[in-house]
Image 1: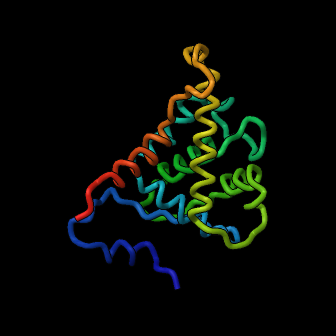
Image 2 (image 1 turned 180 degrees about the vertical axis):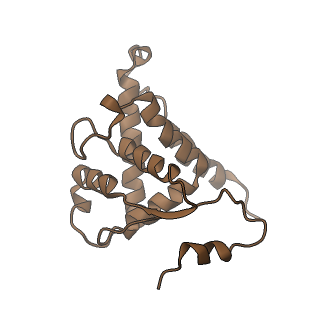
Image 3 (image 1 turned 90 degrees about the vertical axis):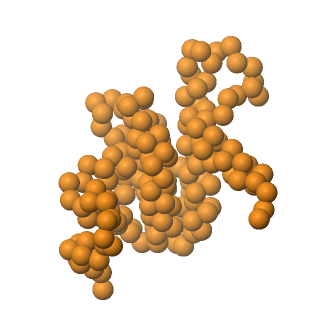
Length: 175
């Protein structure tokens, strides 16, 4: 069945960074598509750092995570708290429960409310679009954006990180 943490650590190749951590996410019945996307995004340091900054820029009242589905809660906020929980693990191996994040996903999109198999790419698109929408709405609320004309919105770091890099990759000559 599953490996113990000591056996996982014993199998690391020589020179593997001692700071590396192996953290799994608990499955809540057909949430493996969510967990796969979260693990991949967490492994992207730039993405992880930008998400973690979100609660520093817009902290919730009392720095406590709002109830999933409440008006004060968003996917990026839930994701930031989840990444923070992973970051705060003291051991090199362990598991984290993404239950609050999964509840937030289900509250924002009825497609994911039913515990059935879904496509990871479909979920990734939903997550990135949701984060981008939240970031755009925050930009519109900021005073320096008041003089902006409709349709003249600046891109968010989501577009910069994913869309522009994909376009740059596609523009490269093939070998």
